[in-house]
Length: 176
Image (cartoon, rainbow, N blue to C red; front, side, top):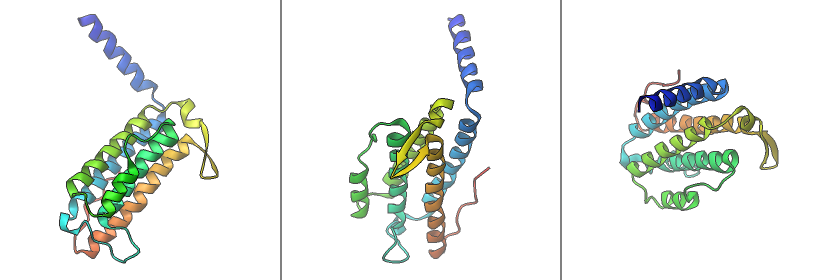
């Protein structure tokens, strides 16, 4: 058994060292974003998950479902080239109807972060540079990783305002 574990350790070590520097940095940042975003989600009491500052805005809870859906879509459809592993439209409809608990939303969000992390982790030099057309625009899969970051950061910023409008101090920033 010892030779097997030695070989396994060497293979894991080689895989770690062979990881693309962009992927390594993206994963480090992604883990911080997950922690911070989940802290924002946890900061709002469940009874305020239906809160929205104006009629045109998404509710606090719906924003997270939207974010999770986009993480799954961008990771699955655009980076992996497969269908999403969840029914995003059904979850968005359930959230619109106010039929998702805080616990369900936080779990969905956490799972979406994990799925995106696994997607980023499997990217290679070659897959990062693969090109695709996205809503009429031309992009690389590397750029989709930036879009994953930007999209969730955009919505998390809105949600921090939602917290403040409810007299709740946002969690301390986690980003380094």
